[in-house]
Length: 435
Ligand SMILES: [Zn+2]
Ligand SMILES: [Zn+2]
Image (cartoon, rainbow, N blue to C red; front, top):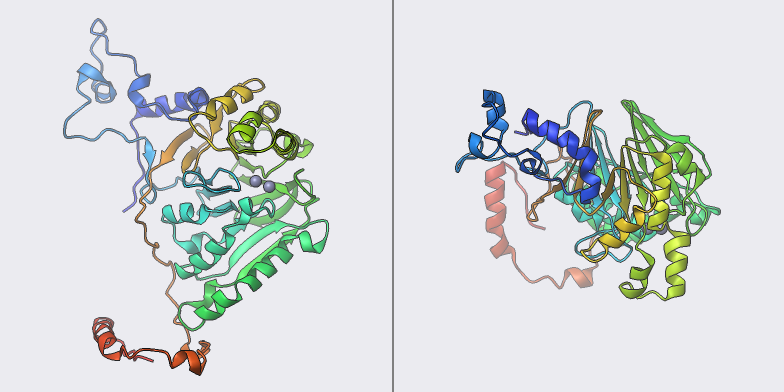
């Protein structure tokens, strides 16, 4: 049974303090004991409640009692009715790597709604690690059509349907300057590219998830509503990146404002409409020297891509100084021991507010009073979570048969497979027969 983790009151106080001080630590939450003053024997003895939460000589520690954890374990915490949880499922570059998938963000609201913003290359496995039933993961918003922002849509679409999404995948994305550069065109053709995959699944499993429900909206819309359901309003603003078309999203719910910025050169719409966000994500590209030395770009390309097509760290800081969010979140760089300092130092030339330099599996719990930042620890042996609705049996009559030439190539395995049929027919009270 899932339970809410309830840290001690002293820890909550610490967590609040941490909320304001995380930025100097690159968002690694300090352990509670780091913030507690050392016990002073000259002071009066603490009250019993305080003693429980105190450190050192007051007996809080025990060889058999667990201390409060400071990581997020998927599928172990309820979400409060007035709480939002954001999980980074991709924070890196178009060339995905084991440590960082490309852009993908899961926003979970206390009303039960969940939204995926971008589903970049490599991110589908991060989503899987969160152990959320796929029926709850049926809404995807694309900032633009670079593969590092939608390259795993096929994986989420097909893999999600196979693992319990019993409804179409709803996708919202921008139009382009021409119809061929819009989301509708891209996804119609993605669906066509999957013809062999989808035809081959007919008649085998629940068919209801293998459909895309695409809503293309005007990329030129300025603070225009593209989604309004269940008390949640999502608007878009234009972004300036590569070609006309990219956008950023602004989510409003329950008095919260969450902004997801897609790739962009710093722009006036973000500066205006992201102002005062509780949490504002904005791209922050690899520092130019590292683009050249580590990513092997030419100096010319590094300058053009790193400062003109994208947002340089110094420019990211400038944007955040304008909009002053409760928490600024930077992404779109390889975050390593030898690159993080350069990003941080450059941002700090223009911004001194709360900051998360994001990495995959970073988690933000956002309430009116606090923003708690942790890392998720995931189970790599994860299996699909349960489907939330009763499965619909596939109709075997809809299967597309092999040609005779291929079908006749089957070795005779009936005798060795029949025991499995017998076992399952008996266990589940069914009467399936081999082909
Ligand atoms: Zn892009
Ligand atoms: Zn990108």
